[in-house]
Picture 1 (cartoon, one colour):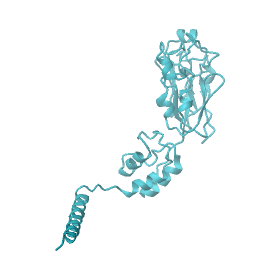
Picture 2 (cartoon, helix red, strand yellow; picture 1 turned 180 degrees about the horizontal axis):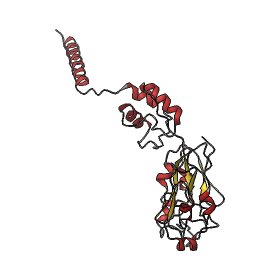
Picture 3 (tube, rainbow, N blue to C red; picture 1 turned 90 degrees about the vertical axis):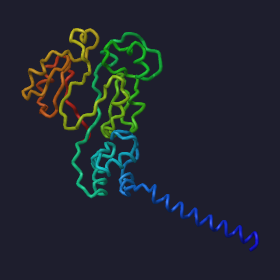
Picture 4 (tube, one colour; picture 1 turned 90 degrees about the horizontal axis):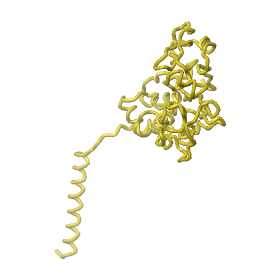
Length: 268
């Protein structure tokens, strides 16, 4: 048997051995991936916004298939995506109420005092590093638009008064603005909510009067006026329980600064 034949046989034998080895390794290290994960991922919007609480749509899809997340976990997709996911998984989709972000501050450039003129990076988080921000109210919106710049759906814009505005049609309640705001001004609320105290300050009323014309004074007049007992004053800030509120407007009439307001949504 010549050297060429020997080489061919050796290479053939090596090939057979490696094939067997790879076959054994494939069985030993096999990790089953539920094909439904890919199917669910395909119906998700692919925005990877993080509103579901997972790193991205693929992780959310895996959690849905494994039962760790509900079929309506994708806030960006809404009810239609929840129905599609439920179809893939062969279960019913729970009705999820539409949610929209709201800005819980009315201390605009005309009504809120400033401690100094901020000249740094145009970012609310950076401004917070300079003496806690330039606004006298330590709870108020800094108005530098970090939420606007980072909204993955273009649902936020800056108003002429220096406060963010929410486009209800575009908002998916993904929560990006909530996570990024250093003062927790944006909040996600259900569209069924009829009223809210659009303020975030927990300062005492005397201080609020001195630094902001549009702040909650914590006076409790709204609480006394509410026939449904839907309003509480928590650390000098009025808070509306939307599950009890009927939107009667009694609190609007009594609020001395007009901070408790009706919530009007352009989506249902």
